[in-house]
Amino acid sequence: MALKKINTVLAAAFTLFILWFGTEYILSPGTTAPSFGLPSWPSGDGDGFLVVKGVRDVVLALVLGILLVTGHRRALGWVLLVEALAAYGDMANVLAHHGSVATALGVHCLTATLMVLNGLLILLETRDGEAAVALRKRIVRMSR
Image (cartoon, rainbow, N blue to C red):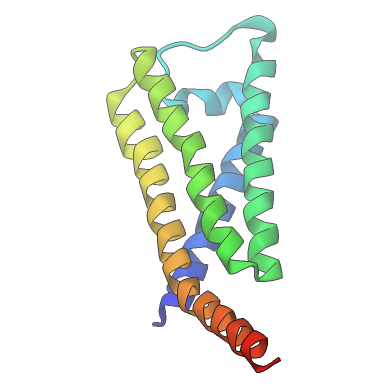
């Protein structure tokens, strides 16, 4: 399977996973929250804070989805790298609040690291195309 196809499948999987997880936090924050890895959750009206996490995840997924659908591969690679910071931040949050180390590393850190890997592979895949465009532009400038 070509690198581009593998990268596309991985990026689509991240998009769907993040969209699903975010939607779960919006629709049923109280039942989804324990899977995040923190030792305790807000009670009463605290569910509103969990919905914020869900909205963040849905927006992150939509950005990836738009870049996938429109074919902006290089931007997709960069956005995957940047959005991995959200998952690393989630990991740091769980660890800082004495939550589940297994969840922090096995879910948040693993997800972030795979996103970084996918982003770097997409940037690698698109690198040659950029070099060809730059070369064409140089040739056109020299021929004038």
